[in-house]
Image (cartoon, rainbow, N blue to C red; front, side, top):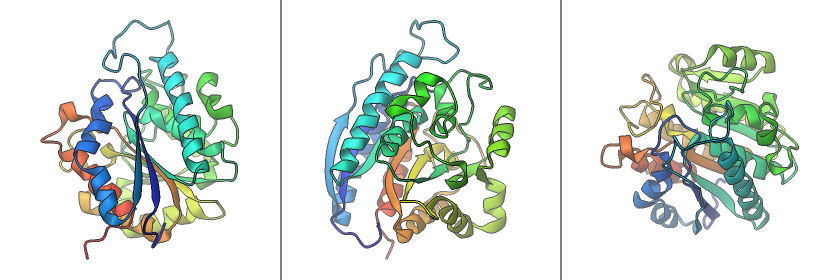
Length: 305
């Protein structure tokens, strides 16, 4: 990505909140657009095509009647993510950088499935307060946004792992979680078993964000064809990003997060990204969406000076 003026970006909105435990994130794509994401990218020199939003049934009806399943709203989440995987594949094939706007973090299932369809091998940086590696056996809630990374690694409900053809799952040795500070007991066992590298907020305080991102890039980009960035806004501290569905105190500062994006840009290895879990119903004057736009700008090369 480094020094690529005129980079071709395909923006895909996914107004889905059925994977979360509360409604509101379905308005995230609209909030990020209202905060000026297209204009910001064009100012940097990017060529932007906004593909609009995927259609999602019952976006606000998080308590709608569903077939009996431990996984909430499984049918609609499978459908939307299947469509998203196709959109991602088409964008990358056409030479575009897919930039996905969520929506809750369950949409990463479709984004990563679409990228996998390209063949090759990709690394993954998962920027999040949570690790999202629950399965039907470990989930305390049944919310699929807490399972998306497990699915990307090849674990979980067969209907979810089959999206995009169910091939070439991401490898644990090229997967990194940054900013974690809320991990369920079952997730701890899963991560330890697979050997996924997790940089907690304690690690960030001890090492500094620059060193953490340097190591994360070594893990995710070393020997791969590029990396995907999956950024949940709840990775930031709620003081800087209050409008998220599952806030956790003690997160990264806005400046730390901005530096992380700048360093990923400098590495020139990102091939796709998503920004998720902006929930305008919990936000303050669209602050979190504006933070998302600032981070997106940094990811594509915007500098302070």
